[in-house]
Image 1 (cartoon, one colour):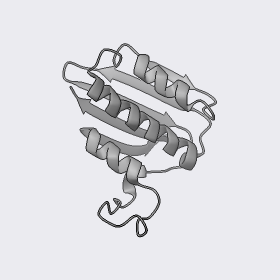
Image 2 (image 1 turned 90 degrees about the vertical axis):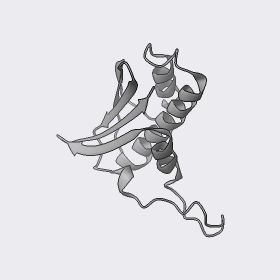
Image 3 (image 1 turned 45 degrees about the vertical axis):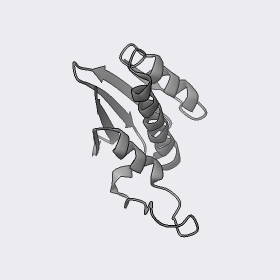
Image 4 (image 1 turned 30 degrees about the horizontal axis):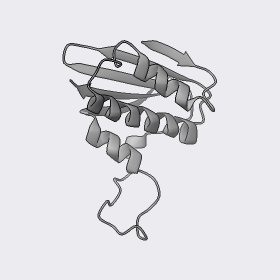
Length: 129
């Protein structure tokens, strides 16, 4: 599946469902789909909140033993992987806001990579199957 969403504001649910219903994802085990859904939602929220892009291109590819999801957008350069990991052992009062979603994505996916190329943010997630 490859699909460009333009505009993206207010379309999070549509983008998430497009990924979840695509041929590469829809027949996966429920526990894997749960992880994919959570991570797609988190990445999409980061694009909306931090890159400022009005569009996102989502590419989903499956191979024999893995699923790869690539997001690219035309917003300002923003690397969500560069933020320090949250202190999950801190009390709620002492925790800083932000970073927990990407932390969870790093735990749930087998590989996450970010780079900025040709004026685009490109975030790739891979889940072994």
